[in-house]
Amino acid sequence: MLSPQPAATKVQRSPWALAGWSCLFTMLGFPVHEAAHALVYFLNGTEFIMTLNRVLPEQETVVGLLAGPLSSLVLAWLGLWAAASGKLPPAAGLGVAFGQVFHRPFLHIGMLFFGLTENDEAMAADLLGLPHAALIIPSFLLYTATLILTARQMRAAGYSYSALLSVFVAVAAGVATVLYLDYVIFGV
Image 1 (cartoon, rainbow, N blue to C red):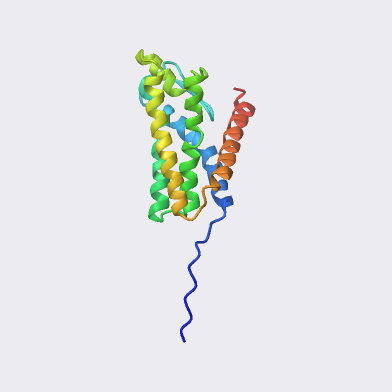
Image 2 (image 1 turned 60 degrees about the vertical axis):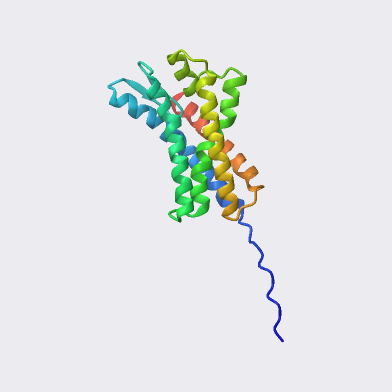
């Protein structure tokens, strides 16, 4: 007599590799974001000073200010593509994406509701003579949609949604590390 096949059980991946990659790519994402600002200013012939968390040009431009957020989104989308296509292991590709987008919606909320105006979208809106919300809300929507897409891809890769907690802590640790190193190295 044939014995029934046992039901396949879905294996849950451990969140620790995902959290580690997310922390690493959060820390690496900051200088990449700032390098995008710096590249625009360099190509325009504008003098600037760059640290891990900021670029201080002689003259800010809208394109220079928005280059950082756009580069972070592109890097997140590349991470999603690399994870989906198998070019990177899921934890690494998703870590790239989480490292770029997990903290930004919270920053956007701070910009909108708590007056954090020293950020790229708010300063670009000032240069354009627009209300801050005119650039912050579309940016918030793009980053939040990318975050949701990343979480869905994380789930499809075998991680539980509870892994988002460890990823959130890892991203927060990455942000805190960059801010601390920026202060220690550059004094700002």
